[in-house]
Length: 136
Image 1 (cartoon, rainbow, N blue to C red):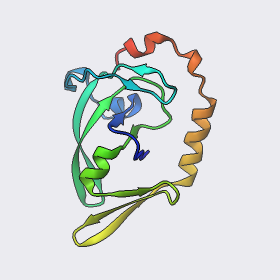
Image 2 (cartoon, rainbow, N blue to C red):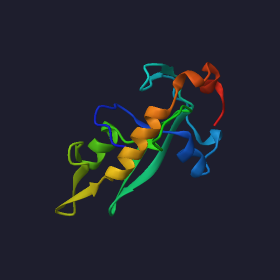
Image 3 (cartoon, rainbow, N blue to C red):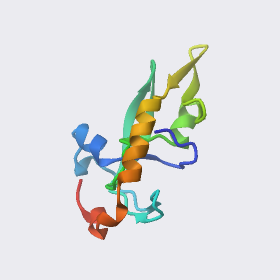
């Protein structure tokens, strides 16, 4: 998900685990974040990873959080700015300059709908406050 209002790039447990990352791969990150539900979230840490967009690769500092999300990651303003990209939620596109051209990443309406359904069906009250204390 691209969120131009997000001041950080976020990684969720499915991606973290899928990449085979371990807690020792994380640097300390002590600031708390506010979740979509308005709750304070204690990040597990920070990790810098390369992210490829087309032929361009940029280093991204992800804040790793252990909370529910239908997304695997949220790419925020830091990634957009590093890539020199402009996003449009209306058109589900991100456009960025590369090698004298303007390239675009096109989102999937089907994936957006699926994530929306999962987010609506999720019941945050079913999660305990211990969720933030569990290890990834």
